Length: 157
Image (cartoon, rainbow, N blue to C red; front, side, top):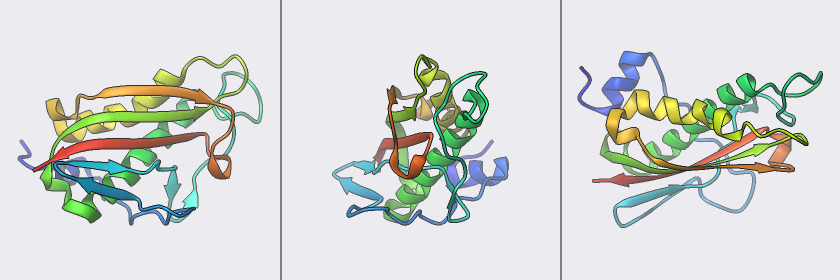
C-alpha cells in the first residue's frame, strides 16, 4: 500500500501535469498557515482546454455529464499540480474542501455528479484524507467556454 501521495500517484499511473498558466492576474495556489488554496482550475490538458461547452443530457453539441466528469478530474489534477509546486504533494495532510462550478445548460441539475470526477480522484489518491466538504454550483458561463472549474483547499504539514 502506498504511504505517500506521490507513491499512490505512481501506483495509479498518474503523472501530475505542469502547472496550468493563469488566464488572468492571480497565482495558481497560495499557502496561508497550514492551508493551501488553489485558484479555480480548468480542464487544461497538454496546454489546451480539453473540452468546451455547456453541460446537459441528451442534446447534440452539448458536453455530456460523463465528459464533464472527466474534465472535472483534469481540473483536480491541475489543482494538485499547483499544490505540488507550492508545498510538494506529499505534504498534503487532507483535502478540506472542493468547490466546483459547472457551466450548465438550462434545466441541467446534475452538477453533483459531474463533480464526482474530481472527488473520486481525490479519494483514490488520499484515501480517507481525501474525503472532503464540497459545493457543486451550476453557472451560466465559465472562462474560455470551459464546462467545469474546480478549486481545492487542502491542509498541509
